[in-house]
Length: 287
Image 1 (tube, rainbow, N blue to C red):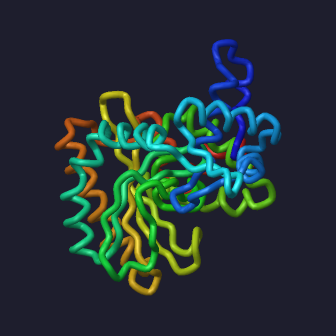
Image 2 (cartoon, rainbow, N blue to C red):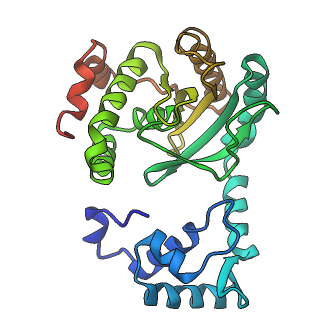
């Protein structure tokens, strides 16, 4: 799990102990069940003695439940309540559900909405049929760098925020970054030309999806939607001519219903991205 960035490290108002406690809670994934201190330490990159103190504290506060027989922990109802409260406050999740369901029925793809969780996107709304090959649920995470949802989110960020995130991705992926960066550049060109991005076999070989970002005027987000299916059902041609345009229309309708603003690239930034190849300038320093 990625540690705090340089800005956070020099922020005197930042409470490191609280951050580490939250990192321990974040270490639990939807299908984990029980985790021990050693597993948590490996996922958080925290020393095991520190993890032991944190799990003890979180147990006393009611956020973790110890299972002495296995010397492990599971999330307690108090911790899960935080997540449910957050979901309840995400109006975009509830309002988008009928739109997602309709697009799912029209395309046969799974339609999801998510928000950023460090270098991943986390699903907080999901609509899928019974025959979809990718079994992702609310709470699942997908990488920003290689997925349609993640790339759509990235290109909806303000330039300064995008540059910072690109740098984090470069540091995280190391030698794998060059190939990912090329895909991100292509995604930026697609956003500028068509309003959506695609990822065909770049996250998983047999998964293809389109992605569109959503911005609101209340200061939240941006969020991103995707529509995906096994690659034999969503060819690149279908993603470009059918799925992508349908997803754009859906997201614009959701924005209108939420009283949001269309996630158009700012005029000044848009001029940089309109012509093919000029998107590369945005990531030129992240090489």
